[in-house]
Length: 377
Ligand SMILES: *Cc1c(COP(=O)(O)O)cnc(C)c1O
Image 1 (tube, rainbow, N blue to C red):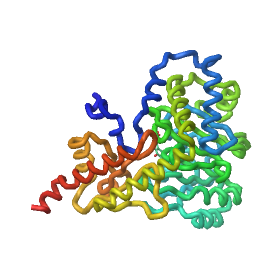
Image 2: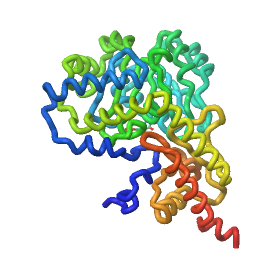
Image 3: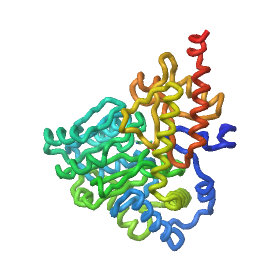
Image 4: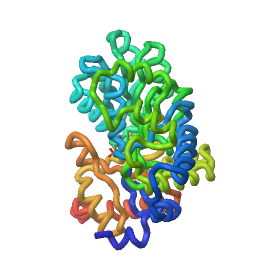
């Protein structure tokens, strides 16, 4: 069942992914299927990979994989590491935590580098952790922590990890396409994202950018792999294809989205996201709602707000839906965060009017939550 309000206005989807689909992407999805290999798909595939490489700021390979953003975690581990390898996992939110889980399942020796939720991972902390653990093979830091609305300074962490000789892996699922990402310049070896966040597409694709330094690691990595094997992906990509049947219509959609981003200009896309973040934070502060993220590290794609005492995220979410037809997300992680924060996405096909409407709706909802009404009586 599709919510009536969404049918009338898809921009009311204000969760941090999946995000609203622009009409160009919807039209692309509706095209007929063509053979997944051959003269129709091959040029599109090559062009798409070049566009994605520009968007990621890399001269390396970009693979498009049928799977969600999380496939990137698994792919980055199974292609480069072996059980028992030491990896540093930076954890300042729910997605950092998830990498700990995934790496642990594959038998890695995971060294946690924790920072309080809402604060960034500091480059100096990564430096210290590497100095204390000289055998570390890889470091993972989430680019944009969707659970807290913190943008980690991966530009400053990359060179530290490179200096040490380890691989630097970043989960940029809610970053790439909305927050600047210059893989080569920032010395990032693997960055992965999903189609349903700043890339304005439906869920279903993982986009995995792989730098040159990764290839020798793929020779040594001992975990068996098939679907997520980078070498198979590279061979197929050279022929303008994917190892298994490409999700043709999702590739059309991603192509339409990348065309839109390049037509707007990548710098303009980034600037629009930065401004949407500013507008959202200013609006929240105006209605008396605190931000979870530390100033200076605000995400341009998602804002996480701490609700006033006595107001729960679930009731705000429900009232936003019932009174305004707007979908927002509750918190992630441990109960105090999960129940006390709301997460508002402003990435992808998003402009100022939608955010203004969301903020007005939230102001109205906060006036009408039962706890407030009791307090006002
Ligand atoms: C959404 C998100 C994911 C998970 O993506 P899926 O497509 O659901 O697998 C991972 N990391 C971050 C930072 C995200 O925002």
